[in-house]
Length: 551
Image (cartoon, rainbow, N blue to C red; front, side, top):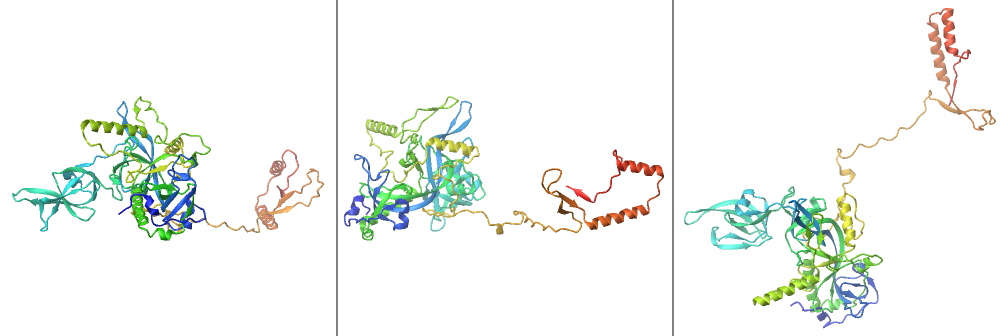
């Protein structure tokens, strides 16, 4: 039997505290977990040491576990039609954090928020015959008896959210001779079921490895598509909040890594786990006699209850509600969400349409009071509360925001323009996750690029050849210094550098000129005079070939 509250933990053993103070982020390295601890500095939510006497906080806590996981940062959107008949997607103020271990099914939407129609009849499902399909509405499935025959009295209800593997259609004959068609399928428990062709229901194909249409898990979306993108929650745990804060239409922004400590206050009336980020400035002292406390029945009951809550946490959409005090220091901004801030007037767009603001907690309480009066007037029993903090641990968890809402919107605008907008280190995108893990506590690996040795020859460019070594030949020009004295007429005082034609080149040119003169025809005196004039130019003096070329 699970205990009713956390006070029973001290009914048998009183904890003895160590003197060493440990920060929350270092607790997993310096102590075994789970452990009983006491907060001596810092505060978060309903945990810690209160600086105000009238504020009730819980310093003595039970640290269940500290886990690192990948989450998707998202925000709620709403679809509405304009006056000209067009559909648009508008963002809401509510931000969301979804673990990749969330077991819900999503459908990818178009830019105007439209999705593909589900399959509404078994006959159409048998015609399309996908490999697997998701049941979105409870439907009756028939079972075969021990003799392998179908009977109308042997049936079972297939719940919404069940995955069916389709095998094909079969035809049977009744005792009256009537022929009936059934769709043979297998559920997740490996039971063989038969759906009649005249049945109606809601079915959606589960997307395969190469499919774009159908429903996807959050792991499939991260591994196949590039964020951001707009999706619709088709099947999964729906958070018990006001419909104006979560409509089922969600915009996935990016994935990030988060380390969370799951802490339960001990002196509270009910066992309610509180997810605390490890970067919260908590200082703790641990219990010396934890080995004795862990053997008690209340401690075992608390661990069992916390295990269920952590499993629910990993399969729940979390609402980001407020900015922590550590972030609000030295910054002036409004609160991140309407849930913890002031109410806002309706938003009016350019076309004149008014969008509903998300309801505050006061509005929700007023709605519940109106419902109670309505039930009392009709003489019915009042329903259970729609929204409470303490009782909805199965489907309601909160997380703090680490940046104001205006900064979040500006980052989304930068991402939509193709610019990097990841300035906040807390929400820095990550590529660390393992899409093959299906447990409630995901493990993660880093996705790295292929090493150069594993790439194909077509992908890698050819290697760059090494530079050739320079070697001087005999006919190459030589650089020498002019032995002219420093007091030259130019007054520069610097040595002039000349390029001298090598002796081998001069000999080769002299030999070639003698060979040409030997076979050259004799010229008349007039021709010799013309040649002499063309060589001398205007100065009238003959130019001689220079053996030295000045640079």
